[in-house]
Length: 425
Image 1: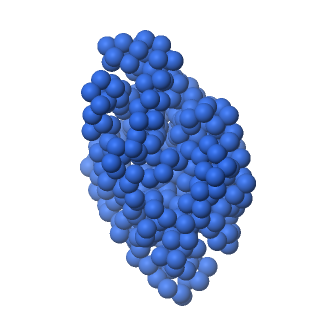
Image 2: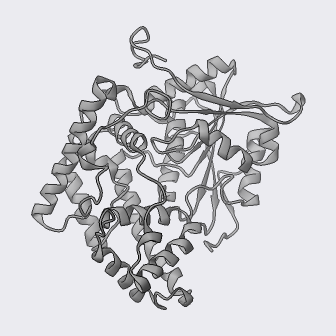
Image 3: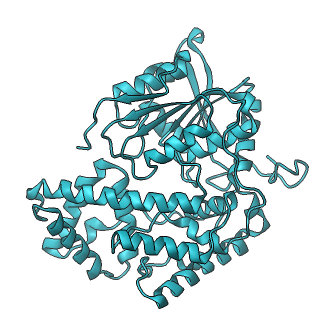
């Protein structure tokens, strides 16, 4: 691929792909289905292998599953922010500033991250963006000799799918966008997500309180106090409040992670051993670097004052918010993008959106705003669910069947369809 699709004869990069053939007979074949797991920063070659077994049998029989590492990730011209302003040092400073001096230090840290990223990546950083990745997808379609691009995008992958539709609307095939990112600029999206995480954490506290055998109390206030006391007791050597918040952020995104987290928190409260609370995986430098590079190359950058205003608003809503997902704060000190990402097009065909009702990572109100950007698109909502990832993720027959009928037979549900209540535990 060209590093910059606006300069096709300029420097080139290589994009890594994988293909898993359909397992049905030739008469059932519908072509190729390109998949993306989100991020931005997630790799798709390994995702194709992990996602395929979860897809409905009819989809596996009908489609070759095509994974790809988007530019800047995995084996596709991976980016590296070097020291990234201390992002990979442990323990990191408390990410929630509460005083004027801490706010200044927070901004200095963001600037250091931006400086390290742009200096280490070099001029290529401006071309590691969603628009160029959307053009890469068009090149992949051509290489596959497919008349249209069939696509499954999850989380950030929905934003990428909407960007592909903006530039190649007449080549959009059957497209499922699952757990939909809003069409806002990235810093605004990150802030909205952080507010949703506050609400989700309260629900988690209530869930823990409803299970007194966990030994953390039988009401929200008591559980919350154990949580706050644990965070305040850190750091322990390389594990501090920032690392704790990252574990909490990941926990809040999927309800099946609630019970393991609650047991780990209880273990710490009663023994002082934080080992079960520590993250199971080491930092992924490429993922974290690509995440910030792509966000900062996609949309207008916030002002430092905007970054602080968002933090203050979140602290007003809850004195101890989780700020882990506000990666686009770094963009306040990034080179402004040449062009912002375009999403959707009047000439695109209708596509299908799938969404959990209370997903805190990609909230439903943002999915509905994205739906309005995609003419004729339909939305299937999994009522009651609080997990990120709906299609071929939560094993809901109603939603999975609707998406499979669309992918295999082209049958669309109504404008907004609701699948029956799906309790979070």
